Amino acid sequence: MSTGLIVGLVCIGILVVAILVILGIVWGSYNTLVKWDEEANNGFADINVACKKRYDLIPNLVAIAKQFMSHERETLEGVIAARNGAESSLKNAAANPGDSGAVAAFAQAEQAMTGSVGKLMALAEAYPELKSDTQMIKLQDELSNVEEKIARAREQFNDQVTRFNQHRKQLPTVLFASVVGFPTDRDLLEFADQEQIEKAVDVGAIFDN
Image (cartoon, rainbow, N blue to C red):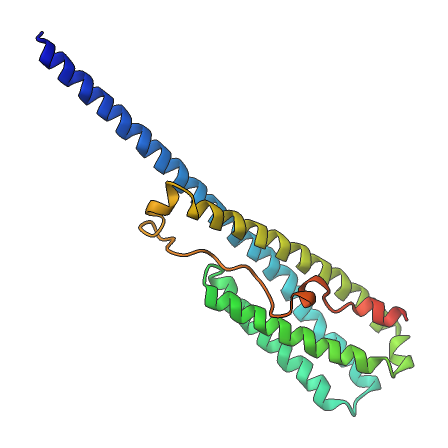
């Protein structure tokens, strides 16, 4: 076998190995990208479950409050309207948690609902009988627990999204991410007022006073 043929075969072998190594790196990077995307989707699913629980509790909150403050009709109706808007936005975001527009709309609706519930709780301060009602006390405990679950789920979701975004920007992922269906970063679940995220309406604190 001639020296030229041997050199040629060696070069071909090196090229094949190099291609296989590159393909392996790309495949592993792609799998990691898909993994973090799925992790983020699962994280939003946890938010979905917790928020649905809160949406189920809010009508009960309004129903009990109405027994003591029926003349605050506008505020009570505002809470229900905000709750319905948030629930609708959640459905859209849960259907595609990678859609930045849907996630942003959900965050805005959540903030509006938090403001409405906060207004109701502020008014409740003037109604001692409402604050001491056993049903309301039980309900506020449930709401406080749900708020904590939502906060934890949101924090976990944002961590997962951050990991996805970081991996998408790294080499070699950034070179092919758009081609395989990941053209942009995912959006964090944020509100205009960050303090509202960190300090959700603490119903329990209000009724403990």
